[in-house]
Length: 52
Image 1 (cartoon, rainbow, N blue to C red):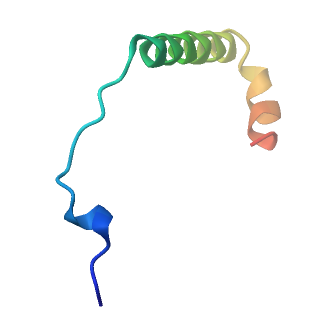
Image 2 (image 1 turned 60 degrees about the vertical axis):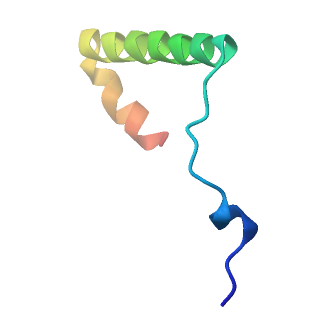
């Protein structure tokens, strides 16, 4: 089997940009809000689980 050219390239960690960091921050804020709502209203949990 031959190796692909991708495998020959050294491993590099992609640097995230400001835009990516802002998106990540927004996602974390939304997840936190959803978790807090479920903690305040645990009766919503079955509804969330059926939507997965």
